[in-house]
Image (cartoon, rainbow, N blue to C red; front, side, top):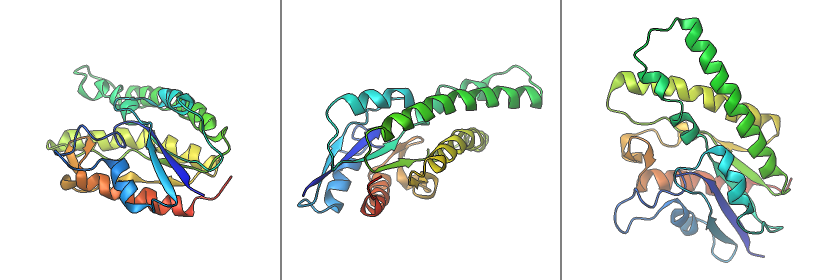
Length: 207
């Protein structure tokens, strides 16, 4: 029986606009790695999507009894909060931490609701953390990594709470060559992401 792997989320999967001419996107890399007799790959992820938009991707077409769902979302939610990093106003450390806590819990509410929507289909599911970007400016890189750790903490906690398998993309895309620009996966990065998904998919068991 042929199974379908459905990719949900943002440009981490929908990265065709960022790779070079003729280079495969993540979905194409996956098709090359999974036996065609056993698997099809459907890309529902949309570049620019935030976590709360994933349920609409799920609802775009029927979810079948043999489907496996893979979600990578949260990076654009983090980008929406990046203004704090460039705000020239002076804040105390406690004010910054209090603001970050508010951001974290707002993201938690959105992510938990989306993850519950994903699991409501009763299909095997895998989620991904948000990888660290590759900025040239050292201070921006360090502050971005620190800020992203807040979002990744939520993703990991909510996935563990629901016993959902997780791929930590921070350990997959680690070098500049893995990025087409500071925040999008290149052909090489997409290949690494696809390999991690293929490995996780082979281990996925029905819930």
